[in-house]
Figure 1 (cartoon, rainbow, N blue to C red):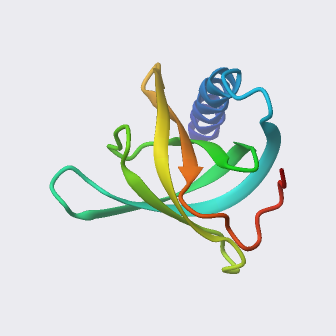
Figure 2 (tube, rainbow, N blue to C red):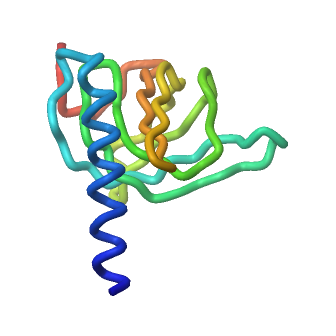
Length: 116
C-alpha cells in the first residue's frame, strides 16, 4: 500500500511540473536528481532531494515540498558535483498539495546539458 501511495504522489507532482512547463515552450524533459538547498522564511537553511523534470538553457523545473516563495534563491547540486548552480525562483504553481517550481540560473552553469 505504501508503494502505491508513493507512486500516486510522484505522478501528481510530475503532472504539476508538466503543467508549469507549458509556460516554457523551449523546455526539454530531463530526469536529473539533485539536492536543492534554499533559505526558509525564518532564515534557516532547508534542503531536499528532488528531480529536475524539465530544463531550458536558463531554467530548471522541478517539484518541491520546501516552503519556497517567488524570488527565493536556491543552490542546485547533483550527486557527483558536476552540476553546481545558483538559481532564483521565477514561477510557482500549486496543485493538490504539490509545488511545481521554475528557477532561473543566476549565472550560466559550467556543466549544464541544455545549451542555447
